[in-house]
Length: 318
Image 1: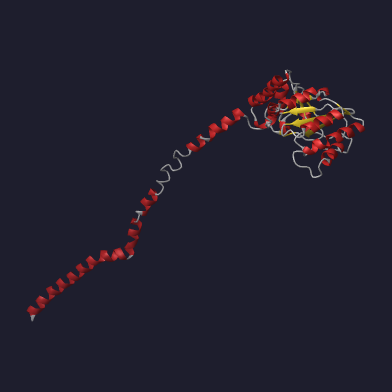
Image 2: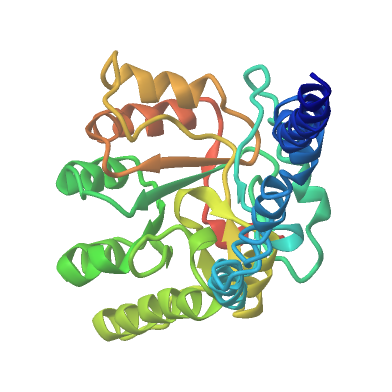
């Protein structure tokens, strides 16, 4: 009995120590799944490295990359190249278009306020004085009814002022010779009837000198130093440039929408002119209008009946 007790005591001690050892081995495993999970969560810096890796592409120079300079490099030359040819339209290069503001019949219209900025070296005329009318006929387009036009002018003993493009007299030299033979006044309307606001100084000089040379070649004479801007488009610089060549630019105080068909035929140009008749009237009509040519005889007769004489633009003083 005493022997059994002596054997049982050590056995109990042995079992108790084994149980304690088993608990000690299971504790760390429990710690990973329980409260100890906070430690692995803080260990998850693997995302933090990936977070620091994400910025790396941003600096990688996608913004800093060479594409950025490339676009800026291309515009810079083209922007500077154009101004050298024709600087930006501002100040004296700002495009202008001639117009007038009609008043009652018999009253001289109002004109663009830009005319008040014309300096003495900008020679231009647009209206005269007294009981005189200046009939100007632009021939930069089709030459309609030449025979009828010349017949009407001759029948009324009217000398008109013709602004002709060089291309027209180059293709129709006899047309020019007939005008000169009848004593009409011929002036420079450029070689090819281009908008001067879209040309360089060099091109403008070529347009004017080209007409001069052709006119002299056909007539043997120098062309009179009077000029009209195609479409009435000009600017202060171009006006000064043309004046520096000795030319006086001729604008107008009566015009019509005669580049398009007239609803009432020849009555429209007749009414347009007679309803705006005034002292010193500079009338613009285009030869390319059939209605103008049909109304010309009647217009000349009625203007004379109102007590006006027809004059040449060379009589006008800037």
